[in-house]
Length: 55
Image 1 (cartoon, helix red, strand yellow):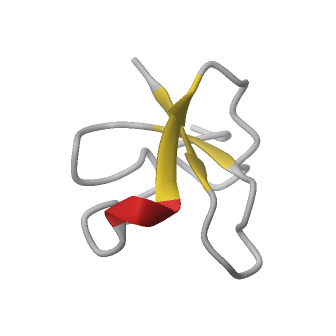
Image 2: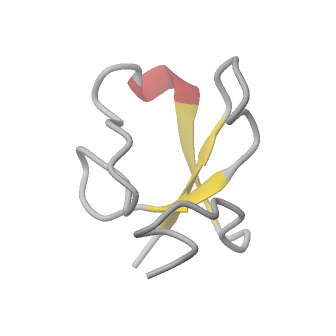
Image 3: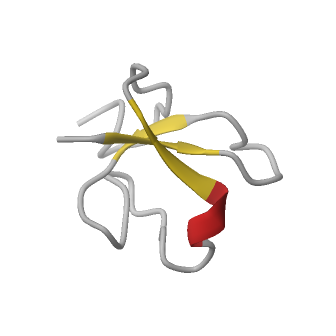
């Protein structure tokens, strides 16, 4: 599974999530709303929300 990093503005900027599908992250963040704010990465997951960092 690929990881995806949020590069948009706000408190989650720079956090790396699990990319569950092309539409959302493991913790439920919607990628489709602002696809330009997300980039695929090989970096380790830094999101601590349920579904990404904590299962």
